[in-house]
Structure formats: C-alpha cells, structure tokens
Amino acid sequence: MSTAAEFDAIGIDRLREVGSVKWSAFPGTIGAFVAEMDFGTAPAVTAALRKTIDDGLFGYLPRAVATAMSEACARWQSDRYGWTVDPERVHPLPDVLSGLRATIDYYTEPGSKIVLPTPSYMPFLSIPPMHGREIIEVPMLVNGEPGEQGELGAQAGRYELDLDGIDRAFAAGGGLLILCNPYNPVGRVFTREELEAVCQIVDKHGGRVFSDEIHSPLVFAPHRHIPYASINETAASHTITATSASKAWNLPGLKAAQLIISNDADERTWQRPEVAWAGHGTSNLGVIANTTAYNDGRQWLADTIDYLDGNRTRLGELLAE
Image (cartoon, rainbow, N blue to C red):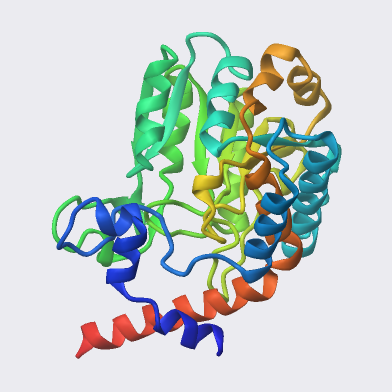
C-alpha cells in the first residue's frame, strides 16, 4: 500500500480511540488547535523504537546514543540546508522550550526584555514572564502594512516581520529576539534578505536571537528553509538555535530536541554544569526516534509533504468552488 493510501485509510474515530489530543480534547469538533499529525510516524522510526523496547534501554541516556543523534542532526542540517554544523555543538534537549529557558537565563543580560513578533506560539508569551522578563510584542505586518486582526486579516496578503518595530523594541531595552523560523503560526518561510535585515538590527543593538527551527523540515517547494545562524558569521555569533524531528515526524510525546551552538563563546557557556542541565530529562526513546528520523525517515517525510501539499491544494480548490 502506498503512503497516500495508508494516510487515506486513517479515520477520525480511530484517532479519538487512540487518544490523540488533537481529536479527543474537544469531542465533536475539528481538531485544528494542536500541532499533531494524524499519520503516525515513519516505519523506520517505529522499528527503531520497537528494537529499543526489546533491548530494554530504559536507563539514563548513554553518551553514544546522544552522540548518534547529534551526528544525525548535523548531517541533516548539511544535507538539507547546506549548513555545516559541528556535531559536538549539537546538544540534546527534552524540547525546544527547554532551550528557550536556558537561553533567557544564561545567554541574555538579567532584566533585559524579550522581543517577540506576534501572533506567536502561545508558550513564547508565557515563558518569559516566568523568568522575570518583560515581553515587547511586535505585531507582524501584512504586505508591509499593519496586520488586520479581524476578518480576512491573514488572507489579505503575506505576513512580514516589522523590522522597524524590532529595531524600536531593541532600542527600548530588548535583549533577545525570539525568531520562529519557519514562522508558527502564520506559515512564513523567511527569505535570506529578510534574515539578513534581522541580523543587522540585532547586531546594531548587541542583541541575541533564539531561533526556533522546529518546523524547518515541513516546507513546501519552491520555498527553502534557511537556518538563521547560517547566513553569516555575525548571525552565528549571536544565535542559539533549537530544532527537533518532533513536528515533521510526529514525535512530540517522546521528548527530544537539539540545541545547536554556532560560536565558541556560547559553547563555553553551555559547558557550565548549571547550563548544560537544560538537557537533563531528554528521553532515550526520543533521541533514538530523532536519530532514525533524520537518517532513515527522509523518504517518508517527502511522501508526507507531497500528501500535505495535495491536501492544501484541494482545500484551495474547494474554497474557490
């Protein structure tokens, strides 16, 4: 059976029976509020998880297992995006938000403000205040104009970062920009020119960037994801990048992500025990699933993106009708 046929056979009743949050949290509604796929995961990942269970690898995370994930992530970054990453600077995390917490605490000045484009992934609005930080919201623009929050706001045109607003936010005491790249929830894949403009602003103010790139494998052609830290040495010098296979291969419950360090000073900071503690709690099963996804789940991902692309095309046709 083809991947498309397998996906076509999946029904809502079965997803609710399994207990998918997306379909069980609000019975009788269309599940659209949480980023879970309906498609399971790649067969290679499932096989690797079964082997891990059979082997009984339920203790603490072995160094060799963590190293294999770092190498797989670095290889993925190189093969997919042309970004050369030192595997020794790819560190395990339970999730991307653990990386954000560590970045706020150890890579920004105490009391500095958090610059956040909006609309935003909800935890980005709630986590900084937990760390005693004020958020400066910078609403995105729609085709260069202030975005409408009402009817047809999103459909009116392309969402863009308000570069002048980000500049003003840093001038007003901002220390860290949370950059969601690609952007959740508006779906933008930023161009190199946009990222270079952001880099100039951050560098001008001596700021930092936390780049959440968890959605980077889920990009439709002809767009291409560009890792923010890869655009030039300046960006690499002020960026902490966090990513994971969890969105693209549907693995969020397995608790594993990667923090990518792109300069010497930040790596020295990470090596401090109280900083590296952010990686504590990363799951063995999640690490193995991420490793397998990056290494052996690529064709499944390609088939899945084709299927999703077909769905969005069909939705557009139905809306037009």
